[in-house]
Image 1 (cartoon, rainbow, N blue to C red):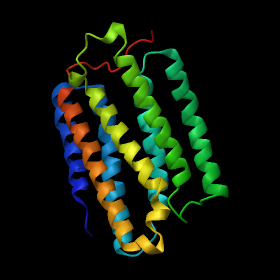
Image 2: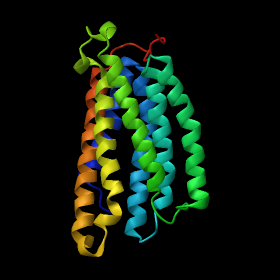
Image 3: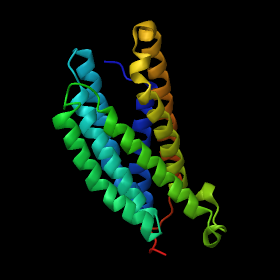
Length: 221
């Protein structure tokens, strides 16, 4: 069973969250600890399945659903404008419903990776990132130094990751075509691993910037 270098960034971010939570008791860190633990377990089980030539699509189909709901909830906590919060509130149940319908009637539970709902989720996470950055440059927030805000780094990592993942998953079937079979899978793996390193590296930076403030959201403006 061989895991890529990105896995060690996942482990690093997990232990960083645990160590810093013990010192700072920040709620953002508390939310990430079980999520990152689940991420590591899924990665280990999924890789083990591959080593035994067992289909592992169902693991990632379930996990990516949890992943999108988790990130959306974080944006709900951090976004301030009521209209942005309402978009998140509506997105979560609608997305879960679409995942269920896709599993039942289209791509199945363990036939293939559910790219349709993954692309939809990626699109909305990018939108939520843009909403956060928009709020961050408003006049009332202009005095805040973004590079010192933990959620800025989380949003930046998510933006890069889901923009890149959305593109390569949209092109996945093309990369797997006969003319690009070997090279396409290699390109997919390199890009995907690199995006994961960026994502979990940004999480580590965010965790180090967390202050001793248990409150992670502001009242709507």
